[in-house]
Length: 236
Image (tube, rainbow, N blue to C red):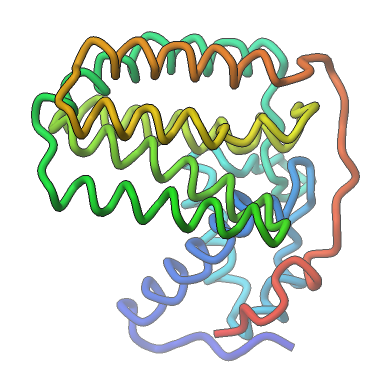
């Protein structure tokens, strides 16, 4: 049975935001796979909140294109089509190399430290076989480069593309190198550290082309896993 509705609107909004954040992380880390039904009753029980709060959280995820809300059927984790998968990676190739060049021209020692931390955590996740967490950290690495480039409009665009990429990889990857290759991020970091804008741009482009080619882009579905299992320990 779900929890009673909080009386304060700010409390309801805060709980909905927390639920949305937990679900977003689980989707990005591939604990909840594309196509999984996100039942309001089940989620309300898992998180210990009302269905109203769950509904608000799902609508927020729908706005970010991570969830599809279907009339009379409910909410499902989005399943990007093969065409969309191609378009997303084509868009990334158009945008991210230029941002890498800008980042090389603007990067600070503090920025470098954050990027190094992302790589270290990503490799630690790979070492213990946590590919979902490694993938999430890899995406954050790309988002951080866009932030360093100091172009807020394109940085927001990259963040949206990374979110879609996470779903695409969950559906279509065919080898572990669909996770960002270790050497690719190291090479990018070295170019950024040296202020080598052209090298950073070229490295980012080749890296994204390789990532795109690591996907087996044909129509298929993966089996959904239990929400309760995926969200274990996520109660509010």
